[in-house]
Image (cartoon, rainbow, N blue to C red; front, side, top):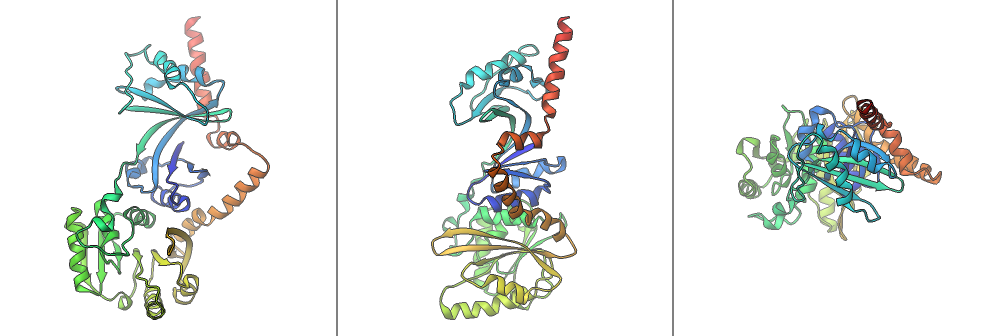
Amino acid sequence: MHMIILSGENIKLARLEAESLLGLEDTKLFGSHLYCTIPTDKMSIVNRLAYARKVYEIMYVTSRKNLEASLESYPWMNVYEKNFCLRITSEEHYDERYYSGFIWKNLEKSTRPKVNLDAPSLLIEVFIDKDIATVARLLYQNFEVFKERKAHLMPVLHPTTMHPKMARALINILNPKPNEKILDPFCGACGILTEAGLIGVKVIGYDIDSQILDDAKKNLEFCDVNPKNYTLMKKDATTIKDMKNVVTDLPYGKSSKKSEELLGLYAKFLSNISGRAIVVMPSFMPVKKLLDKNLSKKLAVVTIIDHYVHKSLTRKIVLIDVKSSRSTKASIVVKTVKKKSVKMIKKDSKKKSLKHHVKKIIKKKPKKTIKKHLASKKNKKK
């Protein structure tokens, strides 16, 4: 069992990114903590997540009263390498040094344990909520510095360029197969292409303006994106048929004249989409009307997520897929977000605690392990 701590910037977007990239099913969300089981073959791409702060493996769940005994009896040698560190997350104060002593006693039976508070090879974290303690080990922590690739730091500034973190998340949500390329038909300053190229995803960028394409290349080179990972071409997105694997941020402007022009551009572009796509539009445009009127009947809108940027701009992130393909599975994951939230509210109204839900998820398997371990210790004494 795993726990992903999501970024609080946009929980819905963060959850969708994790579920899409890692192929997660039957996830449970409590605050910013996403409880799930990450498939073994997906562990190698966990570091691609943009809106995940940390990823943990849950070792076991116990009561707060039983925490000391469980820390001393758990088979830590199975995960111990060079050194360890214990951290406790709780509303109350706990002496971390005192509790780490129980792990030390456990380890010194088999080795000479070492503590490393700065960069431990094994970071154990205990999350205490009321009378329940979840003991986990850190698998991944996100140190990606997206701010270094913000628009104003690029050689060529484009005022409407998407934040690099959001661009990365959208690529992860689309989650193309290894042999597929992503298409951004309005590539502009290449924010989306940059983030895709940096994680080894092949991308194609179109724009109608030659100067913008030249500027885009300068930005890609500045970020050391491998030239083999991207292709830039001068094309009009409204004339390209059969577009799929699209991730794009549509151009926008608030003036009435500009808005009228954009309505026509959006309509032509949307009518040319034939497969899975993520399209970002400003909230002041009639998003639902445009989608209903111009999308192919073979396509379905899986979900629309709002992403607040600033007072004048909220982006609408639209996930589109073919009705008969992955959209069926995606819709099960995504469309249940609202249903799950309603269910959670109902559960809260019945005053069921976090302990009740987490115990249900974990199914108390680790406790059996502890009991067996304690039993074996008693047998040895006899």
